[in-house]
Image (cartoon, rainbow, N blue to C red; front, side, top):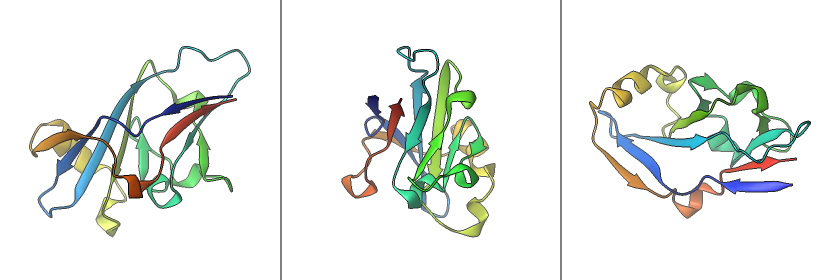
Length: 122
């Protein structure tokens, strides 16, 4: 099994309501052998709010708080989540504003209290 940490180098955007959106770009792991699966593992609260390549992951979580993302991976991937749990964050409308450069951002590592965000290949 291989583990790849995604805790470093996120782009943090501040929205108009002062909530944060976190976006992390990453490449498809090149060391995947045939038959291996790639899982995204994160703190359950945040995993339920994450989007991979603009697709929600909340309904794909299993009992181990992970999501199999093998089939959804592209060569270049975006992982995003809105830190706010408000109901208006259930769609990804905010991502259009983020991508357009409308909001200020900074490159930052995830805070330690967010837990680990990793890819597990097995």
